[in-house]
Length: 349
Ligand code: UDP
Figure 1 (cartoon, rainbow, N blue to C red):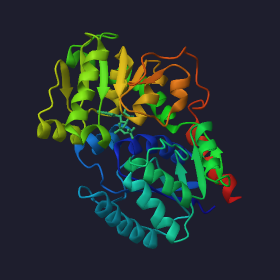
Figure 2: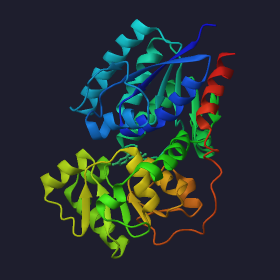
Figure 3: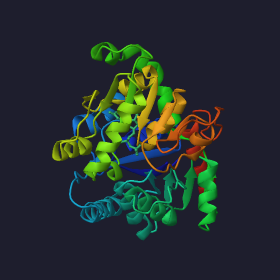
Figure 4: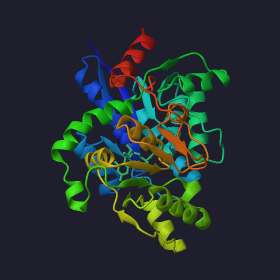
């Protein structure tokens, strides 16, 4: 039997984590094969290599090594590089994740060559077009053949934009990834001992969105809010390279926040498991906080993951308290990667 070839485009940290779940399902299947293309958007050991190693994704077959520069220049170079790969490899599908420049470049290159695009994490909206991620996700959704949404909110957002064909609610592949990592992290990770932290005795923070890092006054306000919200708990903040540069450039005062280098996923999941509260502007971490049943404060003025707010596990830093808590059913059962493959199969048939 000839296998269906999926060319997957990844480039940034959260995409490696999501791809780990789907790649595992592809490897376990008998009817799919995968070509992994890394654009190079995130490139060093702790933002890239560690995930491929720890999550057993295998080395990408192609690495375009494109990073840095303006959004336009970066996306343009990726577009040309991915197009070349597609012309050479002729896949049946192109699979993209989330909302980065790599997502948009992969989707656009494929759509122009009439290769169907499957977008995992389709339909999410912040309704803030000043976010580069929002532009990437809207455009990607509008050129995708198969739009796989982790939430029903995503399905409704697409409907509001007139997109109903090829739309499926599949659950969240990040939930699959986290369940897989959780058990291993409890057995393998020594991060709490290394940092001298105890379970339930600290707050975990991350900050990396351009809207928080680009303006020094905003960055300082975010750091102040972290210290204040943690209310005396020690705060650990694995620092994204963009944020490290912004802190150095602007002389931001971190107060009692303890910064560490970015950590691999196994350590990150252990930190999350051990944290009393999570303070973040990361899309992924807001949901992982829920998966670990830790309350989260989102350091943004809006979120795409509105169900985390409605079910009381998350609140925006602009609101004083969490709503009453209940479980979220949207994210699936940890088998979303299988549902992704089933959706592709159904669409082919
Ligand atoms: N993450 C990680 N190590 C870190 C910080 C984050 O493994 O030092 C993980 C985090 O648990 C989540 C993902 O990276 O799974 C989130 O990525 P990021 O915040 O960069 O992007 P976003 O989710 O906002 O798109």
